Length: 238
Image (cartoon, rainbow, N blue to C red; front, side, top):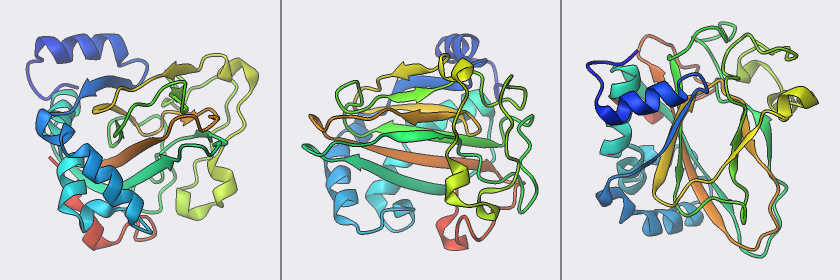
């Protein structure tokens, strides 16, 4: 799966985390880390920060950080488009209900049914703009759940724009949720994962705020439905 002869870093990551479907946390470049406080403020001030990368150089510079792009190339190769970014903020002093179990593989290719046995065409990125841990709701995921073969789980293959928002969040059987891994992500670090990986975050009491940025990539040969992204929001990534 690697684009070329792996470095020591990528070889270690690949061998340890490939079966889980998630790689990281890994640090952003120093340049991007300096941009995180103003990006948090910029995203908070925008009434609709979805796909902010298409109209904000600050957001675009962070999601296109050299460390992220090099990790994508090392692990999956070249030929990806960026079609979605978004920001998720939890304010200090406000309890948060958490985010239910879901996956990011919103489509396969146009209106085709989602193929959970295909891996690598759809990749997700989560960036901790500030610290994400037990005080504000850590990232959680089910290792290996990007595969179509998950015992006890009947996966809905309809693309996102063909189903209701209620169908996006899943109620998982206990034998699957007991596999969950709670993972803190230090500020200025990112994770890359297979988009079909089941993930979410638990509730938090509001003692500490947190802001994360997410990005989603798809290989160039995949058609992105207009219901998911307008043409001007899509850009070549690597």
